[in-house]
Amino acid sequence: EEEEEEETEKKQKERPKQRRMRLDGLQNYGTEYCWAMDKSGTPCEKKTQKKCPVPYCSKHLRCGDDAFSTREHPLGIGKILIANFDLPKNYKMVYFGTRKPVRKLNKFRKDYMLSFWRGGGVIDPQDCPVSSKLQYMSNPGPQERSNVTCTNRMFGDTRDEGIVGREYKTTEFIPKGTQMLQFYGPQWFASRDIEKINVGTKKYPAPLKRKRGTIE
Image (cartoon, one colour):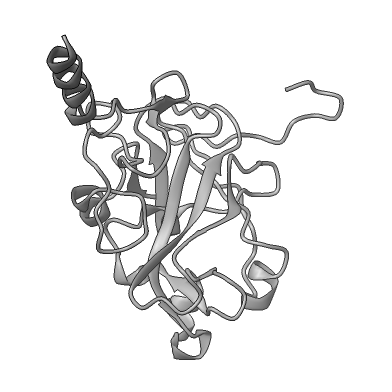
C-alpha cells in the first residue's frame, strides 16, 4: 500500500502543470507560456523562450503576435495596426525592441522609441520591424480615441543588453478589423510640426470620441 502511495505521488509530481488562462481562456496567464495568439485565434501553446525576458515563444518573438497585423493606410500615411480577431478588454501585449541610449538613435528611430526604466535608455523596436508590431499603432485623431495603452510593467532590467519590452493592454473591446490606437503624448506632433488627422476609414475604422455623459 505504501509503495502504491509513493508511486501515485511520484506520478503527480511528474505530471506537467496545466496552463492557467485569463480572459475566459483567450490568453495564457503568467509568463511561463507565450502571451500571443496563433493564426487560428487561440492562445499559443508554447512556453516562452529564455533568450530574453519578453513573454513570447521563439516563433512569436520572431514573427509577432497573430492577434493583430499591419496594413498600409489608404491615405498613404504609413503602416497601421489592425485587430485580426475580436480582442477583449485587458488583452496583454508587449512593445519590444533593443534597449539603447537615446543618443544612439537617429531622428527616424526616435519616432518609434518607447521609454524604459529610468536611467535605462529606451526601447528601439526598429530592430524588430516584423515582429514588434505595436510600433505601427497610429495616434487617434481629433475626433477619435485610443483603445490601447502602456503600463509600467517592464520586461528586462535597467542595463540589460539585447531585447527588452514594456507591457501594453487593450483598454476596451476591439472588434475584428478595427485599428489599434495609442496616444503618442502631447508634444509628439507639435515637436515634429505634423498636423493630427483622423485615421479611421470605412475599411479600417477607428473608435470615435464618446459624447459627454455617455456611459461605457
